[in-house]
Length: 325
Image (cartoon, rainbow, N blue to C red; front, top):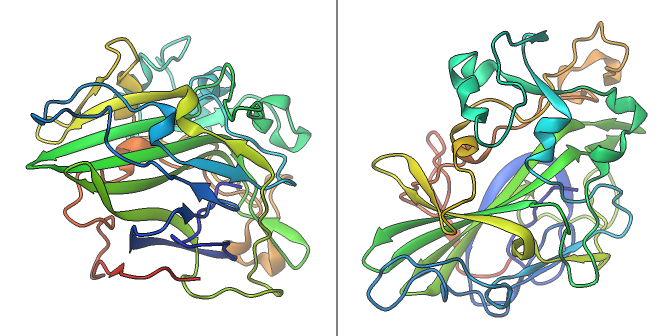
């Protein structure tokens, strides 16, 4: 769950590494668990001929995701995560935090711990509380009652537009190594970015949990993909424009909350210490921890990139001109 493959024609094999894969867009699928179809990806609905920003696209202009049939965790409502968590710093509840915490005041935590804040589950996650499972999409692919996707558009001008599609899950189930899950964490943000020129997609960058070009039919690095449940992410989503100079967001509908997009903390529990009964490691090796820390949110997704790839130290952005398995 929550892992993306390269821009390709069939499937991916999951690995424990995290990379970003950027490729040109001549084909019609990329993988997220299995397949993502976007037969009519365009910026129709984002902008008109004058370049003025208008309104978000409708579902016929996006792609859809096949969720793996055996995955018990589905996309989740972004705001509901705040109902089931409490803000903590170093495993202590943050004093003076808003109560209740909402998408309209979440960024106030930036002054109460900032990036050290963790939205920590009020329930014992080992007991599998129902809210961790998310909301299964209906027959049309919609997560009813759960806004589980956020679309953020950065218009660079001159017909150059980047559209970020961010997907939220209440829980990430990690990989299984030597019979033990590793990398489980509360909260999960995945995303991909499509770069457009004059409304036509030019390239895509996926938040990728694979080793590009390496697929194994069996062994320590593999992923099992199929067409399980169809998910249409933007059927129930938030839509925003992003202004890089002011680092500000504007809701296309004029009413959706924007404060939460500035939150710089983590969207899940801090990694449990070895003394916590829930924590396990293979032979005591740190990178094999069963439970790791939750992720950062949209604010940390490099929303004003020069290249289609997110910036990485001393790493060039290579955009593949062909589809790779």
